[in-house]
Image (cartoon, rainbow, N blue to C red; front, side, top):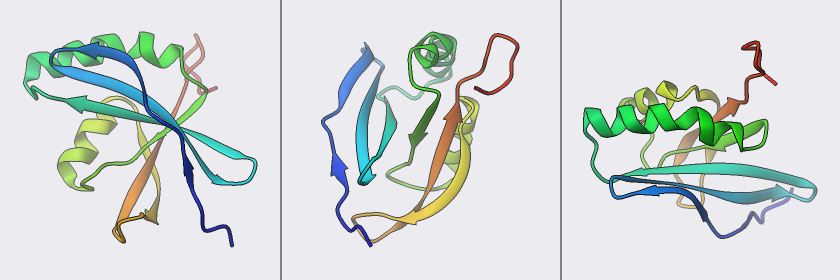
Length: 116
């Protein structure tokens, strides 16, 4: 069993005063590299969420076909937020702090609407 997860530094790909979108790569096992997306919303108002939703398709189009996320807190509020952006829960996994959280995946869509 591979017990070390290599985490690469976060890179900011979109930043506004109300939110940041960052990515980082994690290597959970040799030969496996996963792209994780981090959305930090500093002003969680309806207008900020709408702006982020409007910008998301352009951001998403520039990322790999499969991207992943997980929350610091795995609750219904987080689930509702990420599913707005097309994230789907795929599994629950133990995290480095000992808590189990859901991992979500997002599939890039082709121009015809099908998943890549």
